[in-house]
Image (cartoon, rainbow, N blue to C red; front, side, top):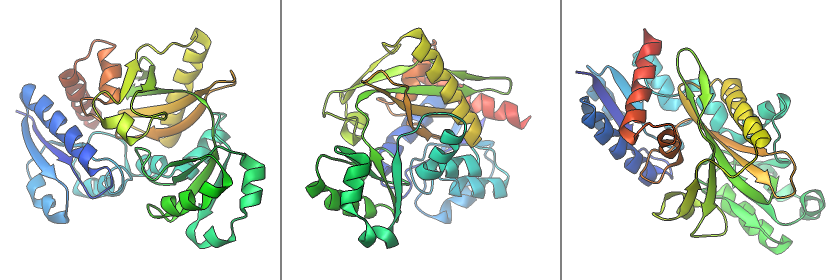
Length: 311
C-alpha cells in the first residue's frame, strides 16, 4: 500500500482554501487505496511525521507552500513530492520575475510598474496616470487568489490601493487594466510529454471580476469547457501555456491564467499556478474531467506521474 502524506493548511492568506484542497486530495487518495497521513503545516514539528512516507502531496497555496520553501526542505529530506521544484515554484510566485521571462520568449504580458516599499513615497501619481490611464490594477507581487488586488478607477483611489497592496507584500505591481474574458489552461506533464487540457472560460457570478469570492464561493463562477474561442486562439493559448510551464521549469502540473482582450488583440498571460487549487469549485479538476478523469483519477494520476519520474 502506498503511503502518502498530504500537507495542507499552512500560514499563508490562502490557508482556508488549502485546507479544502487538502481534505479533498486526502479523501481521493484514500478512495484509491492509499494509506494517507494528513498534515496541517503550521510549524516545523511535522518533519518527524514524514518518516515512512513514499511521497508527499503538497496541497498548500501561497507563501511557505507554493514559493519553493517547503520544496527545498523536502529535497533536503530526499522525499519526493507532487509538483514543481524550488526554482520554478519561486519564479512563478514572483510575478515580476515571471513576467520578464514570459516577455523574453514572446508571450504577451501586461504593461507594468514594479514598486518596492522603500520607493512608495517617491511615486508620481500624475506620471502613473499618464502611463497607464484608468482603470488600472494594483496588486502584491507575491500573493495568489487575487489577495490584496485592487481595480483602481481614478487617481483618488490609487494611494489607498497601493497602501492596501503593501500590507501583503514589500513589492507590488501597478499594471494596465485589460478588459476581456478570463480563461485558464491546465497543463499536465508526464515523463514523456507535456499536454494542455481543454481551455476553461471563466464567468464570475458573484462580482464583476474573478476575485477571491468568485474563485472559491459555491456558485461564485461558471466554468465553460471548452472555452468559446476560435481555433487559432485556442492553439496559441495552449502553446503559450506549455511554453510558460517549460520556461519556468514547472513539473507535473500547472495552471496558466490568461485574459483575452475585448479589442481582439493577442491574449495576455496573467500568472502560472504551480499548485493549482483542488477544491470542489477548482478549475484544474474541471479541466481533467473534460478529458474523462474524475477528481479521484486526476489526483491519483499526479501521484503516479511523480513516482514514475522518481524511477
